[in-house]
Image 1 (cartoon, rainbow, N blue to C red):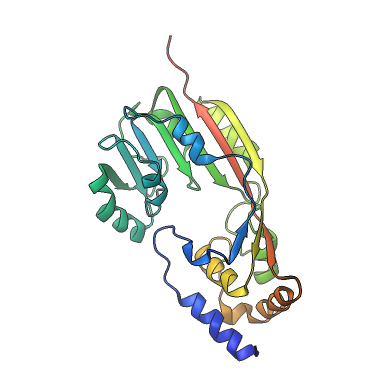
Image 2: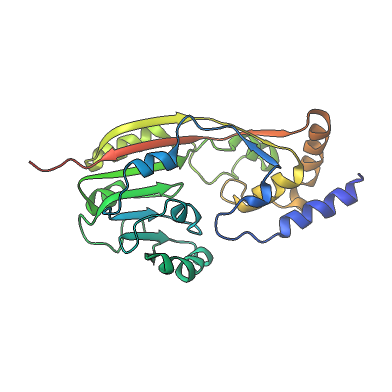
Length: 255
């Protein structure tokens, strides 16, 4: 395939609309190494029909709905306006109340309201999580660390395209959670490999994850993308290294 045809294909990927937090467009095109823990299972172990729970940064609400959370006792926050509007239209039918939240330290909930607070790839204030948890309540978070895609971002765009601090990792986050007064019961960190089987999939991905590929466009990165195309033709994929960590923490019971 000649360069002009490749460019057209990649620009078509770049122009695709992304809704919620749904990566189904990449099914069969991107291969992710499995994490050594099961975040959904960790969450479900802490849930029952009496649980008052909060999902921080729910995205399009897809993951939260997959848990079949207790109606009338489940809340969600979202900062990104298109996702918030999507959730506001969809989640109330399932008994889930949605709030638009932009400041981590100003959640619109009373003290000690929740038995369970979950957070998948969303920023948070550990002190605010402590405030809204009931005594004995649990906080479970899976985070994307500061080394996520850092080498690939540097290869495509040079230094400075990553907005996530390099030092954002398990150790620093555990320290903040402990300082807030929670007890950490589970902590794990992993650096899974991800393989893109076509460069168009990488284009689609990089355009979405704009905080790791700031300034990315097919036009700007075309020569680098062509180099990666050669790599795909030779070995079948382009790989990147992600960064994940999991923490389960509990607020101590009184007495």
